[in-house]
Image (cartoon, rainbow, N blue to C red; front, side, top):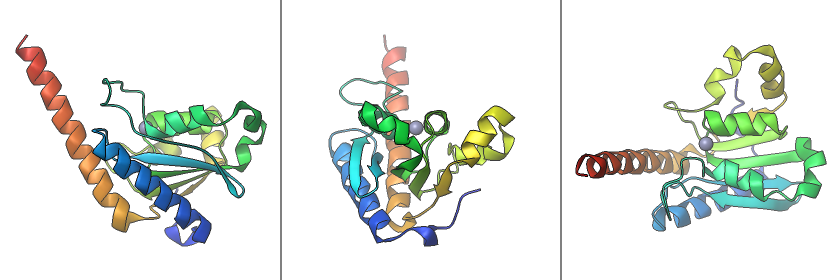
Length: 171
Ligand SMILES: [Zn+2]
């Protein structure tokens, strides 16, 4: 259901590069290397990185959710003109948020065969399917760089899960 990376232009590339830099910053701070940038026309209007692990574990603090929360309220009537750039294909939670709020286009750097949301596009009930189809899903648009970020995010996420289990067991 996604379009190939060929539809990505120079402006898209710059925004994906920006998201990659934010993802690397998040990784250095102890979070998962995932980030999102939201743009309207020529302007970046919001951006955020994953903050699930640091400062405290919070499973909802995905990059896309945090970036959506940072979009100025006055711009929401133009949601269909927004493009969300993300280093990793949105998970089902973020996919749901993007379709619920009518973002017009989503460009992602790497696919996520483990938990990507676009795989469910063909299996949604009609009320959600129409919304999902209204979004242009573009990706994977930067696999050369973003596949490695995805793999490191997965490894760190698994390691954090193991650590939580071990510290719970030792209590
Ligand atoms: Zn997510």
